[in-house]
Image 1 (cartoon, one colour):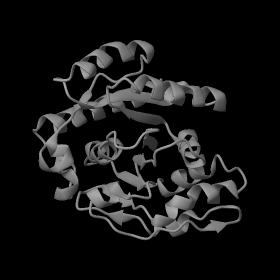
Image 2 (cartoon, helix red, strand yellow):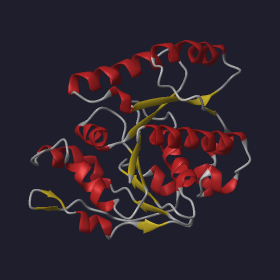
Image 3 (cartoon, helix red, strand yellow):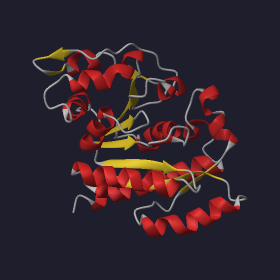
Image 4 (cartoon, one colour):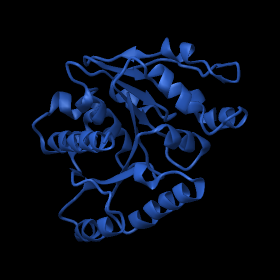
Length: 251
């Protein structure tokens, strides 16, 4: 089982769109995927039309995975389940801070609830918090959507510095360009320059698309509704790159 997280310090950069479409792309006839929605806004849960009320319970100083496993919901798409968001997630930092091994609690939780799956995709809340650090320590890859603007390099440098200061492996960070508008000169210039400072950038670039904006209204991933559109093809290519990275880490 592999844990892949969708994360950004900033909101509104395509993180949830990534989580939903990657989860859809990675499922297959012999692979099951669990999407964990940790963002209190619950956008990933809503996009897949899943509702629920998982509440974190503590037993013996650690999270009770049994209570959350009961909250996992099937979606309309085969082999794709969701552990939906809950408004209580807004207090998850406080709960973690009160527990022993506060930086590793979610690692245990993800491992336990994800036992029946081949991939666990985590839609993280934005900002650098104790929840974020838990997710970082649990993940096999952390995908970071980056809108190609002038502030992007500073944001990535902040994240990289946090990893260095926290003793986390920078190799986990895998950025890619999101919401790309090729008619904008700034986007083209940023995409030319930024990978020089961050060589881990994926080749795939996700375009700005009205199809993506309408995805939540449709209640299904692009790959399940507009599979031949440019944005859907881009997410399929990105999923292929992600699988290639995971394969390369095995050797």
